Each structure stands twice: as C-alpha cells, then as structure tokens.
Length: 153
Length: 153
DNA sequence: TGTATAATGTTTGTGTACAACCTATGACCG
DNA sequence: CGGTCATAGGTTGTACACAAACATTATACA
Image 1 (cartoon, rainbow over the protein chains, first blue to last red):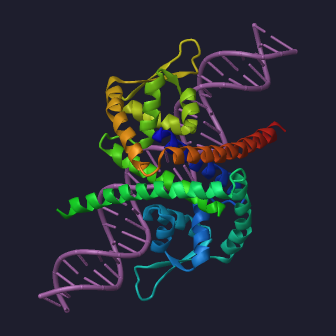
Image 2 (image 1 turned 90 degrees about the vertical axis):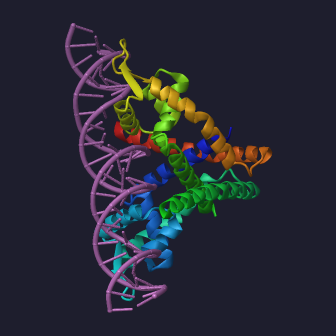
Image 3 (image 1 turned 60 degrees about the vertical axis):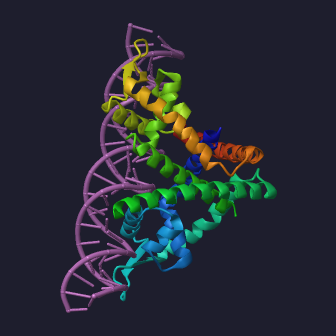
C-alpha cells in the first residue's frame, strides 16, 4: 500500500519531466537546463553553491549543465575577485529573452495539468506532501550523518 | 502555485530514489535493477515488452539494465521458439533469493516514510494524485498521436 | 508466393544523477 | 608566518532516460 504511493510519486514525476522535455524541445533546451536558467534569472548573479541549494542537486551534475550552457553562450561564468573559489553565473542576453519567452507558457501548462484539482484539494494535497517530504528529509540526513561520523573515526 | 506542486512531486521522487539507492547499496544492485527484478519475480517468465508495460520505461533503458543483470548472472534471457523476436526473462536462483531477502525490508522502509500520514489522508492523497496523473497521461498521449500523425504524412 | 509493413529488441549518442577523487583557494591557529 | 583543515568547484566513471537508427522476425495482403 505504501509502495503504491511511492509508485504514484515516481510516475508523476517521470511524466512531468517527459511533458516538460517535449515542451522545451522547440526552444532547444532540456528541462534541467531550464530549471537552472530560471533560477539564475531570478537571483542573478548566483554562485554554483547557491544554485545547488535552490535545486537540491549535485555539484557534479550542475557543473556539467553549466558547461553545456556556457558552450552555447546562454550563461556567463566569472570568478569573484575577493574569494577566487567562487564562480558567479549570469544569463546572457539571449538566455534572458529565451527564459522570458518560456515562463508564461510553462505556467499555463502547469495550471492545465492541475485543472481537475481545485483549491481546497490542492491545499490538502500539498500538506500531505510536505509531511512525506519532511520524513524523507529526516531519513536522508540521518544517512549523511552516519557516513560523516564513520569517516571521522 | 501549480509549479510548486510539481516541484514537490519531483523533489519527493528524487528523495525516494536516493533513499532506495542507499538502502540497496548493501545488496549491490541499483533501484532500477531492483524494480525490474521484483516485477520479473512476480510474473516469470516475462518478455521485455511486458516488463516495459509494468514499469512504463523505455525499451533502450530496459535493454541496458537487462544486459547488466545478465552479465552478473541475475537474470537469464532466452528466445521464444515460436516467435523468435521475443526474449523471455527469468530470475536466476541467486536473484530469487536476493529479492526475497530484500522485499520485506523495503515494505518496512516505505511504511516508515508514510508514518505521519494516516489512512483517510492517504486515500485523499492517492485520489488527488490519480487525477493529476490522468491529466498528465492525456497530455502525453496527445503528444504521441501528433508525432505519429506527422510521420504518416 | 513475394513484398511491403509492423513488431520486438539492441545499439549509439546526448544529457542527467551521483560517488569518488582532485585542484585551488581561503580560514584558522599555533 | 607556516601548516592543517575546510570550502568551492571541476573531473572521471557508472548507470539510467530517451531519441534515432538498426537488425531480425512476423504478418498482411495483393
């Protein structure tokens, strides 16, 4: 029974990714690239670390995405002059125009996917989801603690 | 607002995958491999196409997973003698024992993740989720239809 | 019977997820 | 200072998601 719920979550996430990928195809960017670009747009300039905090992904993954975006002149990476470990990321003009052209349309798309779920139901859904994610988070951070404790021995 | 809901879905799916991956590490299989093995266990023998229907994934992906499982002697692939396009997949004895050792534990793990969500709340949650997935499915199959129509021109 | 078409799987190439390792820089502390 | 440690980020290797192209076999149908 519990497994069924996680199957639903996985399936819905997979379908959503497929839909967004198809939608973004015409703009020639991937879903992950879009997510990075739209976060950078909102909070420019951002360091890689800050992007990671928003997206909750891995630095190795992000590094690859940024490289591809930079190769296509969609982002600009530049060092901080005081702390030269930091890399600031900014959108190019092309990317800014691209993201602005996309954003409204994705909002419509998302709203359409939820057309059968009205306000109160949405709130209940979100509230349950937050409980689940909180527990997941507890379990995940417990795992991280264990591994760091072991390396400290 | 709608976007927030899909962010929750994606995040939860990601966390679940991370948790399962960590849990399965000690058995030296990946989450995707575990999913394939447990489906094959329930309905042996299965053709690749049938596994695809259960898992809703891609045939290219499955082909790779099965190759890796076969290399490690966890599954056995054999041709159908009547229709030689079909590949039947079966578990090896090792794999059968492995999956049986794992299954009970994952059930406990899943139940734990939902410990803060009681019966009625679960039902509401599932019912909302089913609506969302149904809409996603409609949009996805609309996309498929369009592409096949285009190729027919 | 022969030929076009469809169905089943594999292969190849790109992008992503993530662990493990590496580099370079900054911070702390004697 | 100088040495140790932590931090920011990149690199490498494995596995997965998926499109596109391919090989093989089955089926339909003229």
